[in-house]
Image 1 (cartoon, rainbow, N blue to C red):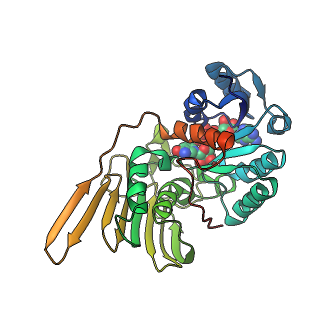
Image 2 (tube, protein in one colour):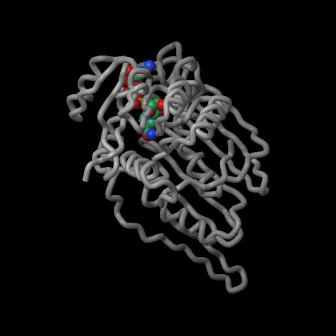
Length: 332
Ligand SMILES: NC(=O)c1ccc[n+]([C@@H]2O[C@H](COP(=O)([O-])OP(=O)(O)OC[C@H]3O[C@@H](n4cnc5c(N)ncnc54)[C@H](O)[C@@H]3O)[C@@H](O)[C@H]2O)c1
């Protein structure tokens, strides 16, 4: 069967490569073009994936009438401009996280999506993991009752990427909060049914990154002196349905983990849950029965970065509902 949707990737660096198995597996879409300002990276990527339509000018890509889907995997500060231009050129857009560094830019992206009627999806791949899908099904079926509180964190002991597009605010738009915090925050809000936030108290600071001798295990390099984003962020959020959320995020923290500690706890009127363990906790206070139930999971057949592309292509081809459709309620 011919794959009728043609995809172009803008930004052919590290993360774009994790999308490629998904486009390859899709029954609807195939990658036919790529763009990157770094010609060496672009050529290597083209060779690795057999893509020959290559250009260093991303605007050339979005003007191409053959292209239906743009896959944006460039640094954060470019997402809004490239996504809006792509939507206005009549393309459907899947864009790496964070969708953009500021709510104002994201609102403009959503306005462009609504004006053009095209699809815009942020690549929040954790939603596509089997344990996320299984827990979401339980929560939506009411296993926890009303979820009134959540605790969520994504903490790295020493896991910052010492490259300018991650650690210089003018290029990244922010530090771990928008880099990795978006993963656990998105997952938690999605599990909670996307209630509307009404108040946020937060802090973003860098208590460790500037201490003498600090280094990043990633590439085993010293933390550059021009590091100007936070290394730690925490927030307390209240929602319009009365629910609350505590969020903690860090790239650099004296914490008991070799790599990364990413967890979510949900507390509802009928039960609690833990992710990624996928365990549900209930307590019958009358009969004094406490029960812990591990959800049965099937092995993931595809990496979530790839699966999100498979499902995006399906959504473009078939329209919603896709099994992975987002909550209809949009917070922006
Ligand atoms: N979902 C995840 O797990 C995950 C993981 C890592 C990164 N990301 C996100 O992916 C994006 C890219 O990160 P990365 O780690 O792949 O970075 P990267 O530096 O490896 O790749 C980005 C590429 O974009 C190219 N680029 C820069 N400006 C460009 C322009 N104007 N036009 C075309 N190409 C341009 C760069 O040359 C580079 O090759 C970021 O937004 C990041 O937050 C997501």
